[in-house]
Length: 401
Image (cartoon, rainbow, N blue to C red; front, side, top):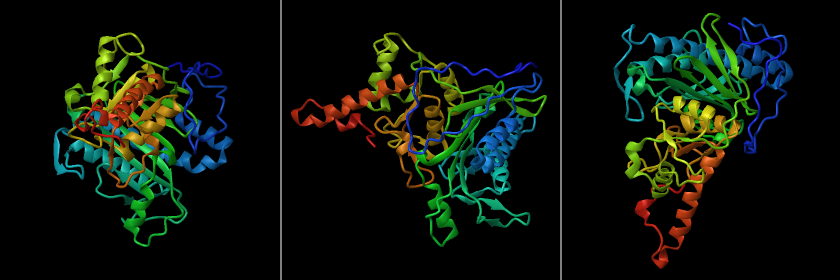
């Protein structure tokens, strides 16, 4: 397989400008010369070159080794689930009140073990666990928060697992925070909880792994978004999507239309105008909705458009989890030049009060997201003028966080 010859070319940058974040990183990025045509730039090589140019990333290099091993194992489990009789319900209910699939449990165990044995985390938190866990596991089974570790991991081990038995693409989502030195609580469980409750803007890395026709790992270290595809003949992730940039505007919207009549009125109006070609783009948008966030975001990153799981009358605070899904994806999309909002405020600024907090989630091309936000802004203005009898009612607005 011929990945490259000589220097790996970078794609042209879009006109989209990534938002300036308080903790945005500016790293020295490697220029990949003398690339082997048979192997390409592997993730291992990429992280070693990044660490060589940026010594402060040394620990992250090792962390990504653990993450990619976990993703490879989950990819194999997904592909062989039917043959290995790993489909169907596990017979458990998670903290979210959702029936766990067998694949939920397996994927959670794989990634939890990969991260706990890495020895780089104070705390790890999973969507499938009731509470955050101490970040290191000894060989005798004792859990311990190591003194000299600096990081916190949060993850959704198998996003879209309700689709997995039907062979629909699923994925893993993860985010990495710095350990907070100011956390001085005595109880270990309280320390774990306090450590994890950080806003997305404090993340130092985030990513997802898509299990589909190919296994694709996409991540950011805070200085751009990059995609690697698993070459199963090598057993290595290979750089295939360097410096990903989302188009300024797209022509696809990705929302669950089954919830339309429970959405806020601004969202209903926006989607109706997209369908009828009355939006700012002056053309009709197409609906594409997989129902697995990783799959929908991966398409949106490449083709542009807008993805949303907004608040509705049933889920007043939204349905997607802030720490495990919304914040990591917001980080990725922003670093690719996109935008991420609840409808009224940036997702990256939302401070969680519980590890399983949910939040309305709208991500995508900056022009598309800004257009939807303008509908909310107009609704807020009208709501403030409701004393004159012209505003929209509270029943039309489920969420204004």
